[in-house]
Image (cartoon, rainbow, N blue to C red; front, side):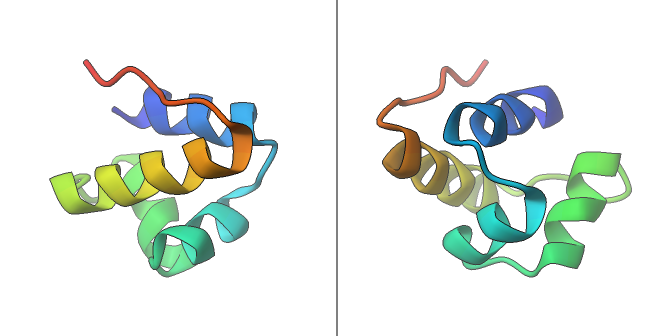
Length: 63
């Protein structure tokens, strides 16, 4: 899942802080999830996907 979120960030050309803000997460929460310190709850994944997809015009594939 972390790789998918990184794909969203790349596709939307946004950094962690910007994606976190758009998704309603703290930058620390997103950073910990991307590092594997905490798991990605499904709501956080959905918010990240919607936030990145809205910015880039694409919808990511979640495995």
